[in-house]
Amino acid sequence: MVMAVSFERYGRLYYLDPGELRPRVGDKVLVPTDDGPEVAECVWAPQYVTEDVGGLPLCAGIATGDDLDRDEKNRQRRADARVIAKRTIREHGLPMKVVGIDFVDRRPDVDQLVIVYFSAPHRVDFRELVRDLARALRARIELRQVGARDEARLQGGIGPCGRDLCCATFLKDFEPVSVRMAKDQDLPLNPLKISGACGRLMCCLKYEHPLYQEFNAKAPAVGSAVETPAGDGVVVGHNVPSDTVVVRLAASGRRCACSRADVCSPRQQYEASGTTTPDAPPAVPETPETPETRETPETKETPAPPQDVTEERAESRSERRARKPRRRRRLHHDDEGDSAQ
Image 1 (cartoon, rainbow, N blue to C red):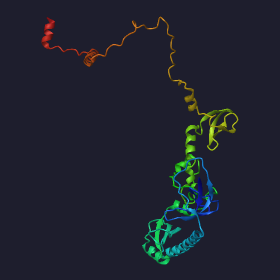
Image 2: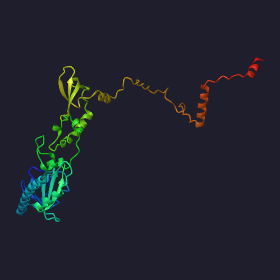
Image 3: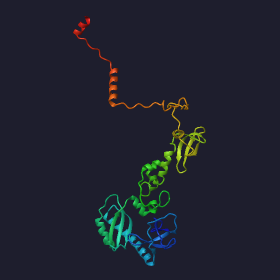
Image 4: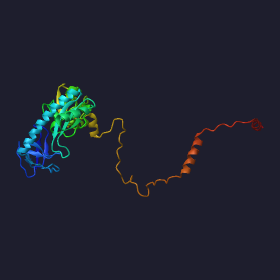
């Protein structure tokens, strides 16, 4: 069985193995973490799943009254630490922005630990800031710088689609996203339209990119002449989600949407037909084998044995001598006298 919990309302879901427990939606349960069990809310009651899911952490139990009081105090401490951190950063004049605060009080090596997540345009010297925060909060301080995508994940928000950010709900790792993905999907290369709340390219560009690559590899390109059930035409657009091709008919000039399976480019038609090109020589038909033309073992020619390399070289030299014109021999004076006599 599998259940899902969330530490924040409308936050990321974490899946657990309920074990013998059967909490209902809205119940507070204990989730094992690296810093000890923490209180979370059950948002998906335990259910049986068809697939064998292994390696899930086991639910630590139902939260008691003491656990709820501790969780509420920690929330108040995180809120107070955020206010103190912002004020101290402003006093030091550092270009830092507080993104999140985490308060840990169950780690065996420290009594109380306050982790401050911040974003900055460049590296910041915060040694004096750490000393002042430790004096003000009376706890051990850790400062961790995060990037733009992690900042959006920690803060949360609403994306251009009107739904909660993917990074704040279900995404675990950030996959690389490039402008090439937007080009393949025929999206406008306007940074305001293809950027998310973090200012980077939207992570959802990665979701449908393999589908567009497969469609563009098999569908005819824009501007190619095709044959459709409604007549010949020219491809003027693609509709990848519906797996159709928009064609402008040559006869009437109107546009129609045809399935990709019904439309084939001339090159694909040629490859599918398997015919030869006009420039290729015509194929010679094979003559049927008759008793007169059938070769018998006695009449069948046997291949000549390979000649020696020296004989081939001698033959080539004699051929070059035969082809080479012989130069006329010049006569000396003595030869001319002998010939005259």
